[in-house]
Image (tube, rainbow, N blue to C red):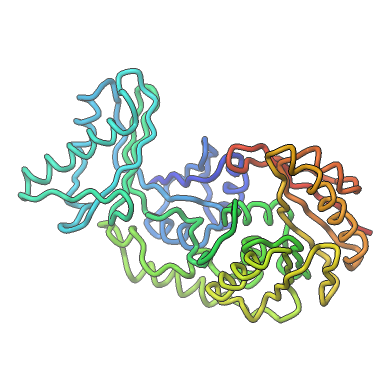
Length: 375
């Protein structure tokens, strides 16, 4: 079978490298995702459970020429829906459509839903309910010009929803973005890590999960791919047990974080407990200028606020200068530091020359991961 593994904008090359490291050979980079060709059903389990960068794993069910509403309906009607939608299970259809004859994506999704319901009602006398918020079966429709494809979403909930985010703060970092930043930073897993502006802890948690070799999907208990006709519980458990057996217990004194906000520190500790890392990662409430990590880190990575209003700029200048001073004075040399920001002006206030700049999209903002070599 062929799969399309979706990801965030500008993460496609990183995802392709990750999939290659997982052992997949036929990989083609696409827009907002990667095509994986000629793989067995077991690949669905491996990518969903192990990928830290993927958002969804889509299994194409039908590719067809889409000229108008009728051809879309007929294309959807040619799929054997009884094989993919068990009785009593709800559905939802996520559509991305760019076509002159189809009014909008919602209308196109409605046509596919009508084809599914009409087929099942005619064949077996029942139709599935639609549940947009929490469907049992998530389908994906993609139409570009005259090419249409309908896919079974084997992931269901987006894969960035690992399961540990119980509490949050304003503008939290997405888990897959944090994993991408750590990948760009060439994080090895044996460094002494510090995030002095840790917020709700996403960078620290993703780093600790990587270091402990904990699968990205470890906290999930059910998967839509279990409804596939090709699903093999034996193969799935083989993948899961093999991945889980590689997990390592992390020593104390490797991961540290701080934040000026009491609310953020509380949220971070709640999320750490949900991830099973509350005894591994030490987090304290401190301003950056006053924070002294118990052990000098050799890997600092942080996503400080960068403000969207001019009145925020003056306050943040001081923070960025303090972060530069923190990396100069409070790290074990040699060390590496990383600041992820969407403000080029604030980046200049760090007072250190970046050895590398990695450009990456952050919710529509072209942000940069600045890398500093500290000696």
